[in-house]
Length: 80
Image 1 (cartoon, rainbow, N blue to C red):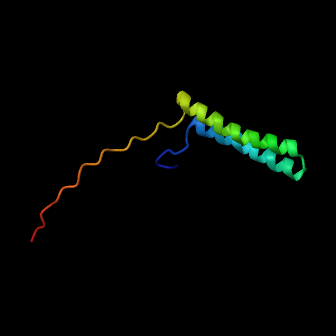
Image 2 (cartoon, rainbow, N blue to C red):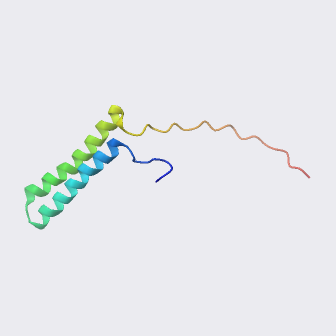
Image 3 (cartoon, rainbow, N blue to C red):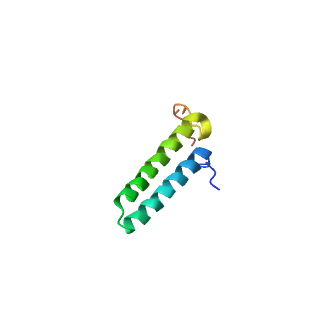
């Protein structure tokens, strides 16, 4: 597992699963030469992004990392 925990949230998993289903559906329908089905799959890919974003906004995603305040650099005297 990643030490940063990137993407290990219900919002990320749900968004990716919905987008993956849309990708698979679009792929199947493009092989079948079904234009309407292809675009339905593309809509599902976009819906995955929207659902993931809404779930993150509802608190089911990773909290944004706050940047640490960096102390100003100080000059250290060099020893002999």
